[in-house]
Image (cartoon, rainbow, N blue to C red; front, side, top):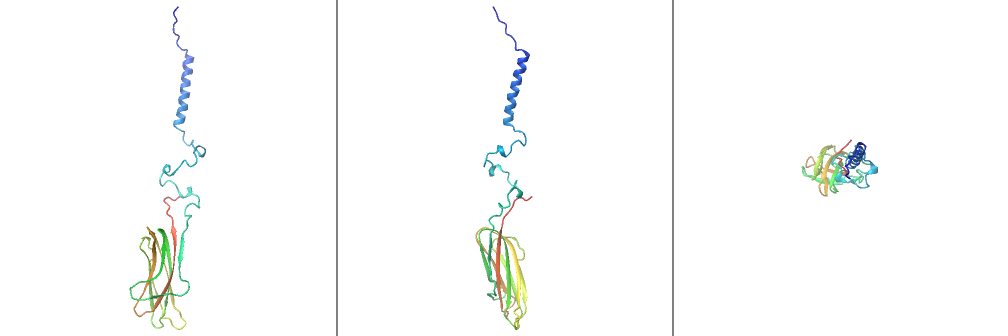
Length: 205
């Protein structure tokens, strides 16, 4: 007795095709995720690191307020009483005040006052704020002020304010240096220096 092979029924063919499509759809879902389907619950803790973040893609609003610029650096040196430095020479700068700073970028301000000791000759105080680092913003790097003669109890003083932005690649100093107008003048000067370290932000909102 011979057996004739029976062809699968149309219903069986449809069922097998449906199974294959279903299995293929599951595989596709694993290899190609729909847009916006991954959230905080699907990301493992500490899985996203610097290499996975596109450079210059984060903005200031992506960080907490206390995370940027947390290590605020402020340094001050000064004289708050009377002038302490005798300014001598014409065109020869006398160092009045220095401020040592570690490497970094700073905004530096100087408050300078001059005192004319002569009762007969007017004085002129010329001062400069300088650094050997890379000056980013010159600001007011140098000024002069005229000082009337010191007559009687008239203790004539003049005041200057200087500032600059500077980047120091290594530990260095910023300096206030002054000179006087003519050889006959008797001028003294004192100064205060302060520095605030700046933080660079590559992207802002």
